[in-house]
Image 1: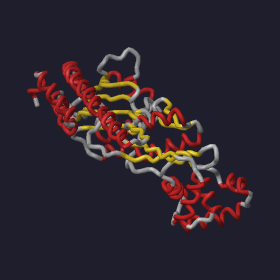
Image 2: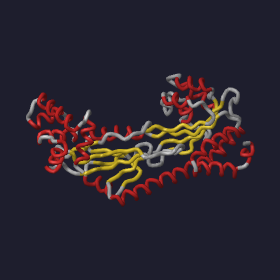
Image 3: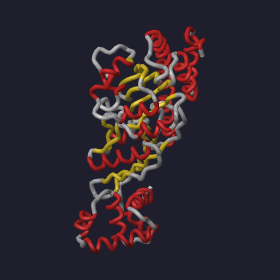
Length: 366
């Protein structure tokens, strides 16, 4: 890899290749480490409110599990993050800044990790910083490598320019996925929101945009939410289930209407992701199924599951998020009577938990 040290065109080609085929990032950061006499290269991202990524060349895979146990984005735990925040820092932060930052740590957790993997020294720079979080490039050096020299830091700075261009290009490519998928769902005439790796809305269909104007669903600072705090919390929990590893489909979120039934059912699903993707591609889709509960809804539940009218009404209220106490009060029955009716509902529908019943009630009406 020595030829890369003096040939800017080759560095440009190497990182362009990584942007176009993200699996090449591993080779790119490994080449950077080799050219600077460093044990490891690193590309790392911290997303606001979301799990980031941490790609390190030629290192034991167990570091991923160990770093997951530490909130590496906290400056009072991670001296590299703290050093990045020091006043009057140059574009390339290095060991002299680490020395200062270590003095204010409140825990040795990150220091212990660095000792375990022998990665105390190195240097770093930001490639992107903004609403989507921070993406940084770094050299991680072991005790044999020693501290970086000015010459090594100069070369790292040159390489970082090519890496920054590659990250911006890959971001542009990945964000195109929102437009492409939104266009597909427009043809299906569905109300859909596409979420990125942070859980924020990156695109929506016209029907979804119209629903924002006619319902209590809203997008607040990029997050899908409701005018009701309890519903917003339920949406956030469901999104986290889908976004955070291991991603999986979440239980649907039922949004009630003024009549006490299910007005909107939100279903949230993970989208396929490929290795070495940055946090800009669509990672999840939210599909809204709209329809106020009606006599037809009650009749469908009765006909499908042989529920009584009372049981169908209870199922709708429960799916709308009403508490058992509120349901009992609204129906003028005792808590014990309601408990017996709920047991019958679960038996007839084959549900074992409330989230399953919510899903069934929402889907049976569409």
